[in-house]
Image (cartoon, rainbow, N blue to C red; front, side, top):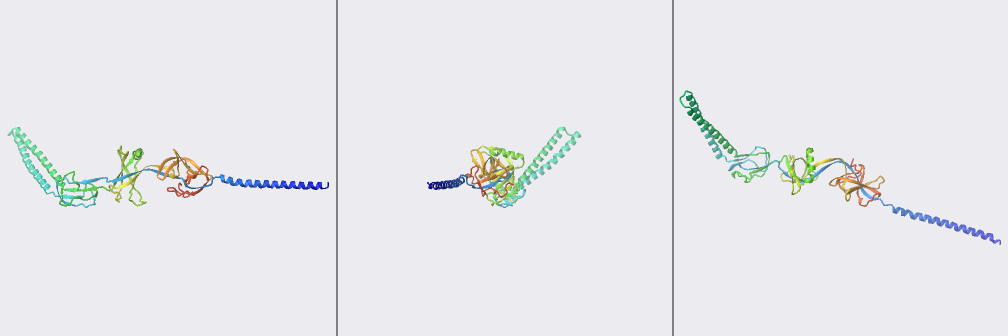
Length: 397
């Protein structure tokens, strides 16, 4: 019976030990459970995405229309002979720069000068006869005053005198016509410009024929014109721009070196009808051409500035997301996450676009947007996309 208390003590110690083991196991289990939940929570958060961003720009944007154009001379003249003769002298050279009135050709004028001398001789003879008729008229008037002759004799003398006057006027006209014919034997430049290839030589026979080959062509090179066509959809904007004042135009020569500044000119005329076959309208522009960079018949590109949008927001077109009729962009949110912002597209121009709906300080995602969802954490780096300014460059200030 004395062993009973000792037995009870042993049992109590065993229970305490077992309960301690249970608490330790619970603690270990809880720790293990909490350790397992941390990776799970970390795995549920989306990873940060690498994106390239650009700052939006605030700029004045010109609205332009580009078209293909052809250089044409403002004035171009084919010179042909106005008399049938032979070439006596050729005073113009191929490609020579000419002034208006400069002598170019002389023709054999011996026959025409002989005709002029004959007309002058006829005029002198008839003037002498007219002087005699005038004396007869005066004498008849004196005799009539003395009643020596009848009135009909005076009337006859007067009629002869008037006929002589008319004959003199005819002779004077014949002399003028002969002088004009003689003048055809000298061919002068009707305009200032550059001569083309001369097609005749001394001794060549020329004829007064409108279908004959021209002796030479003269084209005005400064100023010079460019003709081009624009789609009829741009007609309203084009006419509005011309009514507002002088409309600027730039010519870009394809063969010019990279970086060469375009040649500036102005629109001078818009055709009075739209070509129903092509749906285009013809436009003419004028350019200063003192350096003779532009040449008649040359092909080039033309850019017309219709108007300028002042202080608009500009983003790269590559940054715009298109879903049906909706347009949107991803911007960097305040918490450095992706934010989808709807925008309105006002004007597309090459690699850039004018939009509405963005703040002036917004940073637009340009590269990596295909992997984004609203709220995705971002790891930002400047964009290297074409036509975009780096976010750190200060574009848009």
